[in-house]
Length: 178
Ligand SMILES: [Zn+2]
Ligand SMILES: [Zn+2]
Image 1 (cartoon, rainbow, N blue to C red):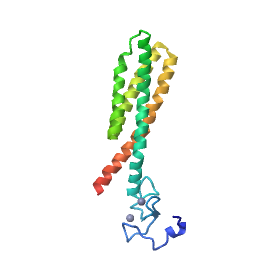
Image 2 (tube, rainbow, N blue to C red; image 1 turned 90 degrees about the vertical axis):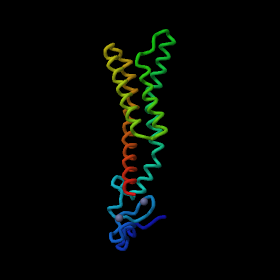
Image 3 (cartoon, rainbow, N blue to C red; image 1 turned 135 degrees about the vertical axis):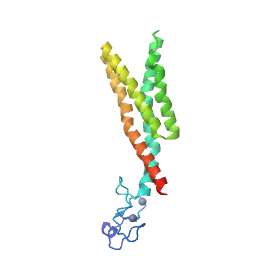
Image 4 (cartoon, rainbow, N blue to C red; image 1 turned 45 degrees about the vertical axis):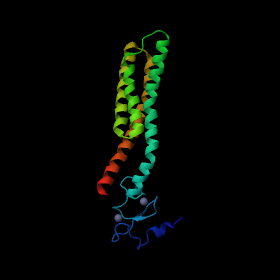
């Protein structure tokens, strides 16, 4: 459905919700004509309902992204604890705390609430921070670089947290305006 760009802005094009206002944008999703008031504030090429719908469509992808980012460091912690134990050494004392981000990842998968993602990120970064301090104390540079690498995933999950939060706020606004 190719439309001539010029016809989008014909003087008679009116907003679908505000007939008294001239349409300024043709939504890239529903194709409706909308005035400045009806255009989404963030996604300027979409109307508000379509921007909300697109965010909802992307939600499962964002959730999956956050879940694997939260699982990476605990998986590594458990693997290295297993190696230590197999060599007859005691597992690290903090090992069980890694269950927190794992639980957060599971809760996030089922509820899609950004709060669980945030808790998972904060606990993961806190644990990795403690391990970094520990490695610095021992001057264990190899361990320090492992910790730094493992920190990338939970820190990258912050972006997913922000996206999830934005989707939640949008849903609240939509419910309030409905
Ligand atoms: Zn639309
Ligand atoms: Zn309008």
